[in-house]
Amino acid sequence: MLSLADIRQVQIELTTRCNARCPMCMRNYRGMDHNSGYPVTELTLQNIKQILTPEFLSQLYKGVLFNGNLGDFGLARDGIEIVEYIASHGVRQQINTNGSMHNPSWWARLALPGVRIGFAIDGLADTHHLYRQDTNWHTVIENAKAFIAAGGEAWWRFVPFEHNRHQEQACRDLAKQLGFSHFENIYDGREKGPVFTRTGKFSHWLGAPTEQEQANPPDIDALLESHVTWFDSKTVHLDKDKTPHNIKCQHEGQEEIYIAADGSVWPCCYLGFYPGSMQHPGNEQLLPLVRENNALEYELSHCLKWFANIEETWARDSIADGRLYQCVNHCADRAHIKLHQTKLTGNLF
Image (cartoon, rainbow, N blue to C red):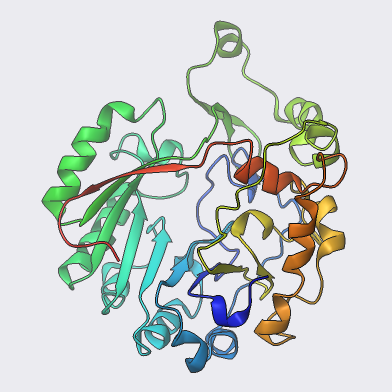
């Protein structure tokens, strides 16, 4: 069982707030405003100092990653101050963000020793917004340029879709021209489908629609009714009694934990979708296993004890018998996400 002394890296979701409407994010339903049970909350500088004490920070030689399930680092009220606090203890940090908020001077302040920022830029100005809805490509570029000019290490993080694949080389060339240190081509299994406005009006398609789909744009109410299982894991996943292969936990051996924006502690981000309130695949299966895991209420070492309940499920024959769906989905049946990185300048951590 993982102990506090074993941890070398922490992934943190600072906030559940976000300015974007990425269609496949659980913060919305294909771009339409929809809260499926997640809390609107964030961790403050005081909270971070309580959890990440100087003694604990001294053992995090793999660093701290800010990469939330639901929110964006740039919307956290104390974001800069938190990064400064961690940097003052010599701990390396990576921030993944859409980068389309604040002004260039705000981002320049983050150019601190050991701080790397991954900017999500999915194409050029004419395609980026088709997935990163409500973000502005020009704003992201200007903010990244300011961070780089101040001495920061920036990564260009590119998710390929049918609508932007043809621009990948142009994005790579621009990344090099602007001084990004790395370019990441990230395939993470995001699906195609319809995209809606905040109020549920059909906007556009991700991927190529069929002729029938093109001629008959979907109605959001009918889609929600027919795809209620998107929010109901009992009917969409847990009724499938497949026998999975042996689980090889992606985080086993990485000595990492995930801390959500409400202070709760999890083995990984796949399990950290607020099972007490959120309609997310497998949450009703996970919830009975969770015990006293909020680091704002209990010592961090105590918050790790319930992890053993998860490992016990891996010996069960199937999901129907209690083997955790999320563990099967991400660490057994599904191929691991692959990152294709091109080093432009600089070094990896």
